[in-house]
Amino acid sequence: MKIKAAKIRQWHRWLAPVMLLPILLTTITGIIYQIGEIGGFVKQVSWAIHWHKGDFGYIDFQRSFPFLNGIGLLFLTVTGISMWWKSRRVYRGNSKI
Image 1 (cartoon, helix red, strand yellow):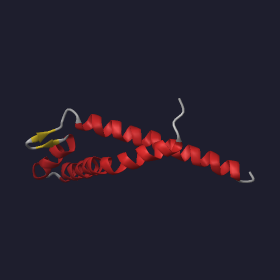
Image 2: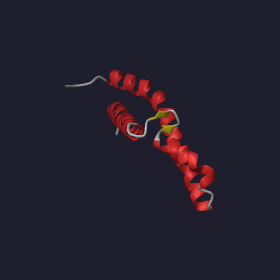
Image 3: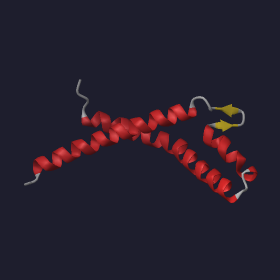
Image 4: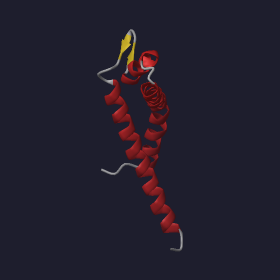
C-alpha cells in the first residue's frame, strides 16, 4: 500500500504541534532535575521529576505519558524521514548529477 506524500505531510503537520508541549515538558523537566541532582538540591526540584514522568497532581499520566511520547516521537521521525527521503529523490531526479 502506497501512502501519498501529501497524506504523510498532513499527518506530520497535525501531530508536530500536538507533540511539542509534552516533548518540551519532558526535556525541560529532565534538564532541571539533572541540574538539581548535580548541584545537590534535589528536594527543591523534586516537582520536576514528577512532571517529567507525567504526574501532574490530580492528573496522573505516569503509565501512558512515556508510551505516548515515544509513539509520537517515533511517528514524527518516520514521517519526517519519509518526507526528507522523497524530497531528496525528487531533487536528484531534477538535477544534473
